[in-house]
Structure formats: C-alpha cells, structure tokens
Amino acid sequence: MPRPLSAPDVKVAAAHLCRVDGALAPWVRRLGPAPLRRQGPAFPSLCKSIIAQQLSAKAAGTIIARFFALFGNPPGARRPVATPQQVRAASPRRLRAAGVSRQKADYLRSLATAFDSGRVNPRRFARMNDEAVIAELTSVRGVGVWTAEMFLIFVLGRPDVFSCGDLALRAGIARIDGVAPATPAAAAARAEPWAPWRSVASLYLWQIAHAPFPVREASRPV
Image (cartoon, rainbow, N blue to C red; front, side, top):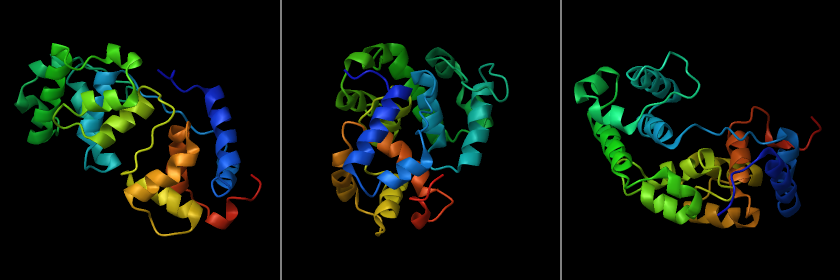
C-alpha cells in the first residue's frame, strides 16, 4: 500500500502536475507548496466529519468543541480526542446538550459501536487499498463516500484520491479551465492525468476555488 504523503512527495507531485497540465501549472507555481493538513487519529477525525455535515464551518467548529469538551478536552485543543467507549457511554441527552442533533448522535454512537466491536479497525487500514477503506467506512451509518475520501486524504495521507462529488474541487477545475463547473463524471475524467498525485491536485484545487486573485493573475510571479 502507498505510504502517507510527505513534504518531499508534495514537491514531486507539484512538478508532475506542472508537467502534465498546462492549465493547472500556473496556479501551482503561484500558490507554492500545497498544505498537507494531516488530521489526528481515526475515530476523533470521523466524529468531527459527522458533526460537520451540512453545517457552516463556524457552527461546526462550535459544536465540535462542545462535543469534545464532554470528554475532558480543553477549549481550543488542536487535536481533541475521544474514545469509542466514551462516546458509547455518553447519553443522547448529553450529546444533544452539546448541540449534536438527534440523527448525528445516532450516527456517532453507530460509529463508536463499529470501532469498539472491531468491525472498523484503523490498524488494518495501512494494509488496505483505498477502495477497501472506503467500503469499510461507508458500512457505518452516517459515513458517506465523501467523508471516507476525505479520511483517505487527511487522516491516512493517501496520495491519489480525487472526490469527484466535491463541489469545491469541481469549482477549482472550472476556474483553471475557464468553464462552467463540470459534472462529477467529467471532473473524474479531467483528474485522470494528475495520477498518481490526485490528492495533491485536490489540495491545490481547494485553494484555487477560493483564491482571492483572478485567474489572469495566476501566471504572474509571486
């Protein structure tokens, strides 16, 4: 299985992206090294992903902080932790008091049960390919394909993941190509030349989608 992305890998990936894609290359040069932004352990990371579903970043951050405070994490903890056993033991009332919806509380408890029982075991992930990890994670209620793909990129550091359903990634493609946002299938096809570094391309596209300077400035020297 591929090893997690490292800073030297990002440099190799950037050179590859510039070589194979003339539309993406000016943006890569303008933006510089892509941020890795690796997250913490598997279980807390998935809890955060579930809580953040369909919420603004600000609202999600508030509820996530309250959720982890239930388990003794101080305010502002960079990598808060919680165990499956702790989440299983938390009553629905406590979770609701932290701002977690009834449905998401159910999802969190399902996730905790899957981890606690060993049905989902992150120790196996290093030996599993991307498709197998996605299949195992999405067997848990509340964990969809997008969440599993983000887990592959930001927790496991897999180098060649592209989430074609991600709206921001498709917006980034639209921006580099100067066209309307593509369908998921078209976005997946557009990403094929970026292999085996599609995760790094994704890191750039997320930045490009929100870049404060116009497209015509991407090719200007920094």
